Image (tube, rainbow, N blue to C red; front, top):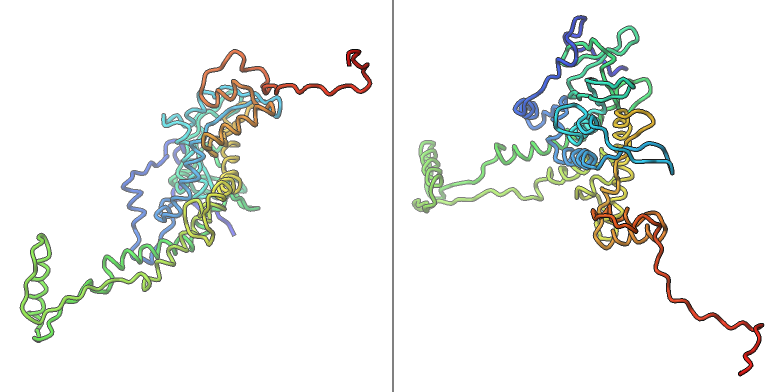
Length: 405
């Protein structure tokens, strides 16, 4: 079994990968997302198609949005010798597009989340060997196959002529397979069910095989022409004005309502939406508000945030840090500020500062910097809590007694 396939026009002489980035317009993307011929026809061949599911979009946007906005810090050394260094200029805009590091990180994470692979073109590399500029490709534009035991790539059907410039970073790897597994393709049945149910509900209300109301006459039999005339007059009276409708005797109008308990697809949709959110990690469905059998209380809200960070977001943060560290010379590396994710209220923040100061984890100026306040001259020294009033010493039983006593 192989995940490799031969791309179109992938023979020798293809144009260089950097010239075939294949940018898609918004109209083209939306057209691809809405090409299904019926509610039962779901096409997940494009990464954007799965984003029609609100649960898939919310889960992927949550992960990519949170991590792409976390502050980035660069360091040299480990442990006690770790020292923060200035972020180099090329890391502020990794693809040179002018959209910045947050935009680039969002693209990277969405490629990983939807397709399990990130592909790019190395635009610039420093003489020391580290990356400086990488433009990311849409993951669905890249194909690959094995040619004489070597990996061969094509972008939009044009074979890559300089493999040294081609960047591939995968997640969800399997032994013997070069491409990472795509969560969307792996769970296509679950996502397809959610999209199918949504489209079924839409068609039920738009053009389902049921009338919205019944207009009948209980006293006079009507032929086809009379039925058509009554219908047209009734509809014309309803459209474009708010005047009352007047008919002769014997007319009854019954509006057909869709009872929620009769719409079993609503329950199916709620279940499948929670399942789609679970694809992307523990805690995602609960954070997004999908009913999963548990109750949300004040006591466990913080626990769920920690679960989200530890089990759902942590691995994506570390993968992002490893890739961004390739843009720095060794032994420098990149760390994302996880504390920015666990935002606290004022009292919790001040209690954390007090604990850090009393245990000499931080200095006064370090705390003031976190609170965006200017340093003070005495703030770099270790913090010493104010001494409590000294108690009177106990009398020494061996001391000489006072002569006057």
